[in-house]
Image 1 (tube, helix red, strand yellow):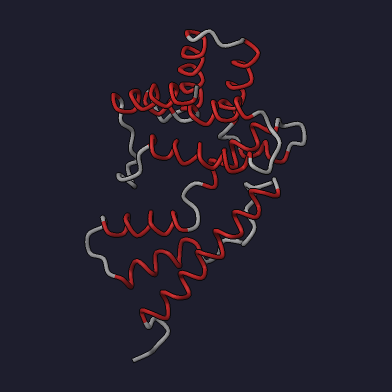
Image 2 (cartoon, rainbow, N blue to C red):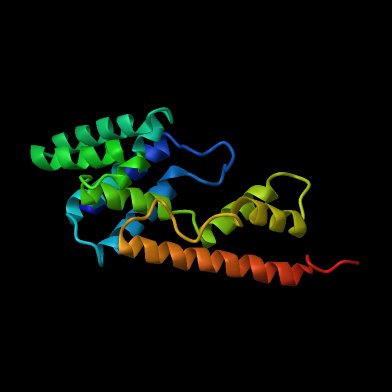
Length: 204
């Protein structure tokens, strides 16, 4: 069933491509696939309604094909139209739309009444482009800046992330916390290794 939704989503993004201005290589369809993958991984150890969460993950950013401004509202509208046309149950539709409408509100992670599906969607969204992916993103972005070098790319990585705490305020489930810590360790180990490889600490 998710395959049909993914095909619909791909056609939607193909007809209305959306890339971020700073990171022109970052397009929303690929981001959506990664968030979907993270949601599936979280579901391996966290209890939640699988169908609701995965459906919400598929549609959560499709609203960017309309406008980045309040994209969650556009996403919910597009999702509702698709689910109604495919005769999904109204209760199911309501839960999916709730996840989509709330997925950008990180403050809900502090609210004990927030549905587990909403929490996991927020976490899956935040886990994307962290760790190794954040290194790749910044390296690609630095490469597009024109006058760059290994040293400048290293400094970009260092300046952007070195002050980040090892814990992520956007992860509240034990599974997401563990994944985030693993990602941060990989990041800091890479930056430390790059420092040695580039001889950044050696004065000439």
